[in-house]
Length: 161
Image 1 (cartoon, one colour):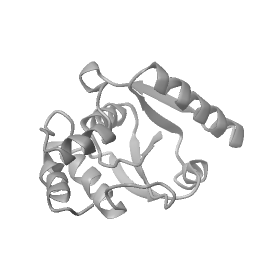
Image 2 (image 1 turned 90 degrees about the vertical axis):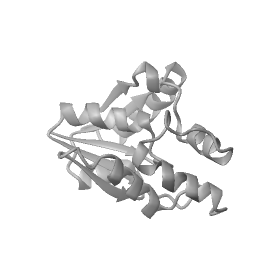
Image 3 (image 1 turned 180 degrees about the horizontal axis):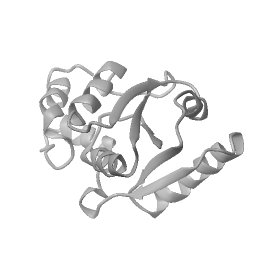
C-alpha cells in the first residue's frame, strides 16, 4: 500500500519527521507531498522545503518526496495512493482535519484518511513556532531535524526573508 503525507513543510519539523517515520513502518511506500501553492505565503521556497525534507528522511528507504500543486485529490489519483496520512497535535486540529477528510471523500469516494496523533514530546511543535524561534535566535534542536538547523538559521540571520 502507498500512503500520501501532504504538507507545506515550511520548514519540516521533528513532529513531521515523527509522523513520517511511524507511517513508513505501516505502509510499503510513503510519498511525502510538498505543497507548491502560489496563494500560500511560505518563508522557504519549494526547493528549500523539498531539500529539507529529503535531508531529514535520507535513512527512510520506502519514502520519497514529491512536489504537488493543485488539488490534493488529483495528486492522490496521479500517484495511485491508497490513503492520506495526517498528523494531529490536538483536538482543535482534529475538527479542522475532519472537514478536509470529508471533502476529499465527497470528491472521490475511494479516498480514506488516517490520522496519526503526535507523540507527546512533539505535540507543541509547529513550523510557525520553529520560524519564530529562528527569527529570535532561539534553540531549534527541540523543533527541527539537526540536518537542517544550520540552513534555517542562515536564512534568518542573513536577512534572506
